[in-house]
Length: 316
Image (cartoon, rainbow, N blue to C red; front, side, top):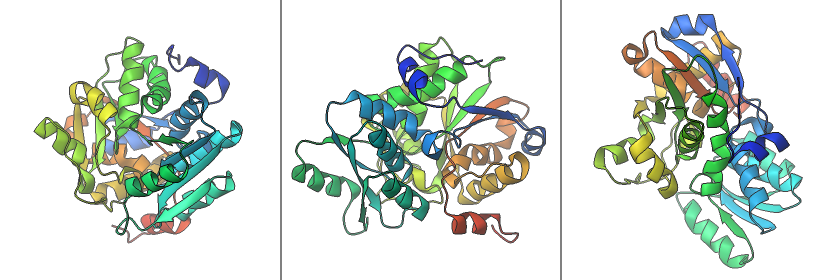
C-alpha cells in the first residue's frame, strides 16, 4: 500500500517509520464521513517532524544546527542530531509543553527558553547565529529540505487504494501540507489536500484570500501549540498558493473536541495540533459528509496535565 518518491526514498529506507493507517468505524459514524487516520504519533519522537528534521540534519554539512520550535521540530532535530553526531540548539517559548522541553534536553540538545512577548523567536535565533557563525540555521517549516522530508508522507499516502476524496493536514507554517502535496504529485496522485488551521491563528487562510502572505500580528495562543506560527513560510507559500484545495479554520472548541474523539473512538493520545484535522471535519460536517477522507494526525506529544484537562467530563 505504500511507496516512496525518489526524493524521500533514502529517508524512509534508513530510519523513518511508515505512517500508521487506521480505519475506525465508530469514529467515522460519529463524524458522518469515511475517515482513515494517518497517525504520525508513532513516528520517532512522536510526530511527523522527524521526517523533516532527519532529512535536513543529514543533508547539511554543518555539525551545529540552530532552530526555533514550539517543541516537536525541536525534539525531532535534537534526536536526528544525536543519531548523526551533531549538535542542536533549540529556541523555544518558555510556555512550550514541558514534555517537549524535557525531550529536547534528553536527546542532548540545548533548549534555549524565551519569553516571546519580550523577544521573538526569529530575533533570538539571529542572536545565536551571530554567536555561532559556523552553524546552520534551520527553519522548522520554511526550508526545501524540510518540505522534501515531509514529502515522504505524501509519497506513502499516494499509493493507498482506493484513493481518498480528500487528504486533510494540520497547518501552521505550511511545511507538512506543502510536503504532502509535493510527495503526492511526485507520485502521480492528484488527491486534493485541505489544510486545517486554528481560527485563532488563521494567517494562511487570510493569505489565500489576499493572494499574498499575511502574517499574524502576534504569536497566536491557540490550543494547537504546533501551529503558533507568525506566518506561512515563503517556500511553502510557493507550493500552497496554487496547489492547496482550501483551508478550514477550526475554532478552539472543535480542536478540543477532536482531541477527545480520537481518545474515545480511536484509542489515540493526540496533541491538540494533531487533532486539527478531526476538528476540521467537525467544522465542515456537510462538506465532508460521506466523503472518503484521510485525516493526518501529526503528533501525540502533549503534557499530561493539559491532556487530562481536555479529557475532563466538563471540558469545553
